Length: 130
Length: 130
Ligand code: HEM
View 1 (cartoon, rainbow over the protein chains, first blue to last red):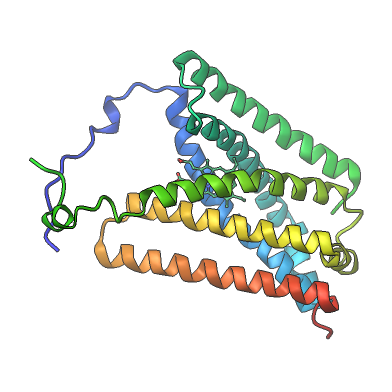
View 2: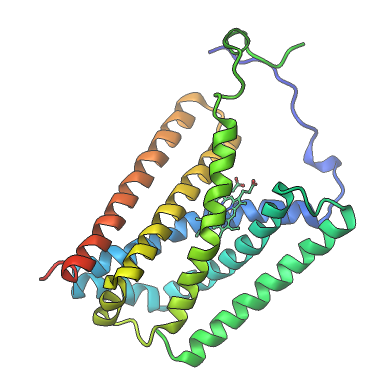
């Protein structure tokens, strides 16, 4: 197929930084991270079906230092993607486009994601699950 | 100057004709994921421990099996749709793009089958007996 010389969008450098552009790329990055992280969910389910030994190897990796680090990143990505995903759905329904509101809801998303991630781990640690 | 390729113009179809369905399915899976992921987060927090016996017991109950299967389907479908767009946005080398898109679809279907089969096995017989 021959390449058509399509016009390219302007270079990123011409844009002024705003909270929205960072949040937008974060949604994509966390989406990709979650897709990879979904493999942990799959390994957990398949491991459980394969029997105690297979399950134990999955569990020991996830409960180990590296596994815990990954689960921490996964949970933070999840709560961010969830909060910002809700923001997306409101846009899709036609709400929340006002510039000031979009900026505020963006900051709210970040704060809410951080708070819920922290709360989640406090509950995990205090519940003694592991 | 027109941005459409001659073939695209001739066929009279926009980008692969499936833009709306793709967009819509991404929203539907997002809406499905809201309750399903929240259920899963609370279920995890409610677990007493993560031994093989408790996890298989939890996964094997009818309600949990069904919700876990729905979660897995929604996550994989949503992930397939999302990663497809990411590849389409960033990979412009024809053969690489096609291989990645095909690979993504095959991987998502394979993961889905493995996960669902595991859940069914667990709910019927408590998993494979070693
Ligand atoms: C573990 C589960 C999830 C995975 C693996 C996942 C993965 C992804 C991926 C890979 C994308 C594509 C990103 C892009 O095109 O920039 C995406 C987009 C999206 N996700 Fe998720 N996601 C998950 C959970 C959720 C949840 C719970 C919501 C609920 C609101 C959600 C809402 C969205 C929306 C609205 C988009 C489209 C954003 C856009 O149009 O740019 N996702 N997700």
